Length: 226
Length: 226
Image 1 (tube, rainbow over the protein chains, first blue to last red):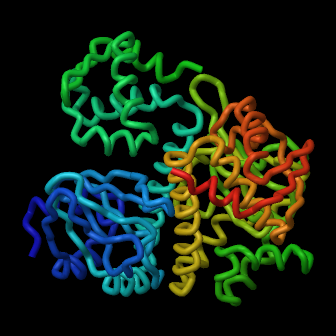
Image 2 (cartoon, each protein chain N blue to C red; image 1 turned 90 degrees about the horizontal axis):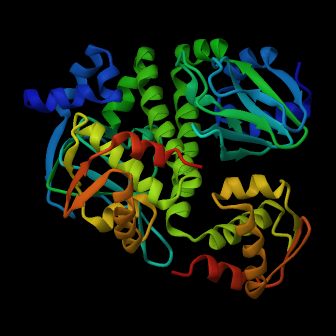
């Protein structure tokens, strides 16, 4: 049985939050909470998909292993977001690995149970489509950013998003190791260090993992420069 | 009424091709074919979504307008692919513009009609989910490539994909203007010219829009270099 805080967390997600309450009542007794230590995998690229997941604590990175042996972070999920819904109704293997970035808790719901409920209830369709659409849209924004913005601008954009995430605090912590952050932004770790130095001209002070934004407007202007 | 070749084209798409025949029978009489000249918009970012589309001829680019006035190509669709399915069940506006890259034909199916059919028939769920999943997966691959590969490697990867698209021909044409290609690959037009020169060392000859791959294995090795 889920605790009230785990239930709250599931209801915050686009997918589970939009499900009709009679469907939620049927699936919740089979939802499970699992803990993962930093670096541990929820699943590996190539595993058969069996569940839909919701992050309850920590953070989960989705990574792709490349032919040359390197690894790319394609997305990061925080508490209150679900992942792997797009594999519902597909008897398929995961195209990415899901790995804990910090000590994390993940709620899993068996796919077979969800598929049965979704098939029987047409009013669950919008929930599923909306969750997948939000995911698509998030990837399109990331592609836009990768193509149009410089590496330094992407670092600046990430710092602005982190500030938003921290209730617009002007001082906050970077929650990942620098190597993960560089991979997520598609730059080399050295470029990240150079970007932090350069951003000091645009209202950013970095001390270890701690960041202070002294001039948010200047940073926004830098992100939108041609 | 659709011509047999337009109908064939629709059935090639993941989405329409997987729909049960009784659902197809209901929607086909309301499908419409429209022509678009190069540069003409099928829809604009911000328009209310009303249809799901299938490319029958030519090519359609999806673009995002940035705050600073520039435009980014986030995806390109060819005949036999559908787009805008992810906006089904959402009373929403398009987050991207769809613009003809060449003189094109596009088949459109009214969203309201599709939504009604999908709600009534639970066996349409896999079709919709699979189409959206394929789209998600395609974006994830693009992100992986943008983050892990250099601009020159992305050009090489694109040439290999074009060769596949042309039944593995060793000589083929680049079907877009160089500016569109550069925007799709997230590089500057000057970088594209430099990449073509550099790729001559890896089995590529470029003369105007015509490309010849003289050593495919060398090109694949270059794409997978660290």
